[in-house]
Length: 442
Image: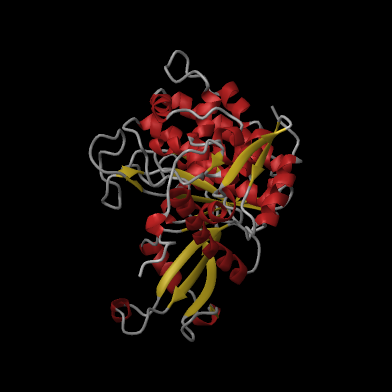
């Protein structure tokens, strides 16, 4: 016997104009408003006579909020127009077709104008309390492959070094917080280090102008082992920690390290990992070449593995000009791997896994949208919730951004009603109060 309360007897109607599907987006929208994001876009982005010129701030904010709501393509922005969402976000939601026209209006110079917007937004957020101030800051330099399909996308028609078609953007991430300090789209076949020197120089200038006055350190993997990268670090008085490419002369230098110079480090295999250091002069044929510390970690291959049949140790080495104990520096360099958490959040948290346009510049603008959305999420957690460690966009969406609400009006004042017994209601309310306390910037 079927119950009278069967789900089959539940009536459904899409008829409530006061409902808000993603009412929690009020938090990042408030932060964006107090940081003056829309005004920054209108001031620094000039599309000239392109069709997408009008209402540029509203269009960019629509894309950013759609990304924070989980949208990973242009058409997903249509969800923001449902119910009373527009009245919660504080700007005019634009249609998906209008957003497509907006992105296709971009040329590379316009993408650089968006870089100016993200640069100023970073400075404003850091002045509001999200930055390192006088504390040391480590910049993790990295790149990633954003896979695409087909042959219709400019800059993604050739295979990348991973043998797939796609783009190969450069990224600079703040260690510990996951803030995207800078990003730049490149074609898929670009070598990892291509343009890295200029990119790093601009990144350092960006964080300095944003208010980072403490010691800067750059961490990078072997793809960025290039003389230009080291030269920029030395010229701009930035410390570096870069994985080295192990050619024959480096192997000989490592093998010459005495056995009693190796210090054991904690590892799952007893006596399985050690660290030592020596002196090495990278790029010795370059002008002003100077010796630096070469820190090496050796690891015993897993017993029974194929690598164990070929060698006694697997070596991982990096060069650095930093002061400090060998073990401390080696452990810190390994933490460069945490940059992958930020990259994963960019791809699967705010839609960087999908670059929607066939136009290279439009996809460059999409990368900027993803960066801004990612940073707004991180700053919402840091400034609103007081979270010192990064909180993923997926977690914030589940707990804060994805709240369902209802708008009502009484005495000419709107009230947003949210679910009772919401587990994170206190944190949400406190975050809203803190974000509203940030001085308005126009």
